[in-house]
Amino acid sequence: MSLVTNTDVRPIGAADATCQLRDVLDRVGDKWSVLVMALLGGGPRRYSELQRSIEGISQRMLTLTLRSLERDGLVERTVTPTSPPRVDYALTPVGETLSVEVSSLIRWAEEHREYVATSRLRYDVQTR
Image 1 (cartoon, rainbow, N blue to C red):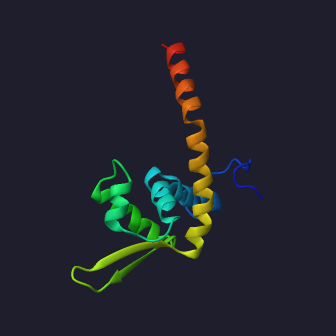
Image 2: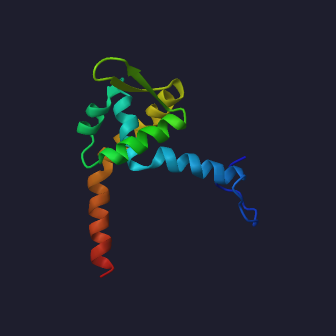
Image 3: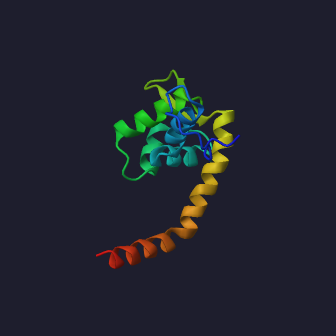
């Protein structure tokens, strides 16, 4: 059964499957999660590598994103007891399956970004 085409006209509660699906999509579809997942698709990375590789992400937002992805079981955090401690992030097996889909989305965005930018400009000019 497709949750997207559900035609029932009843309120959706927090326990509803549609609401639960939206919660998962909100997590894996936000811009920072997509970029972190794409980077980790190339193998484990240290926190500092992730931060340097994602232009515009604050330390706080990267930390929140990594914690959320870890909580959702998509990323695992490994601490190596050195001085200072080394912290690495890697995709879990389920995270790896999502990484394949995220890579496709990023590839699509790269291929169509000029089309989208042109369309936005055309729309903005027409609606002024």
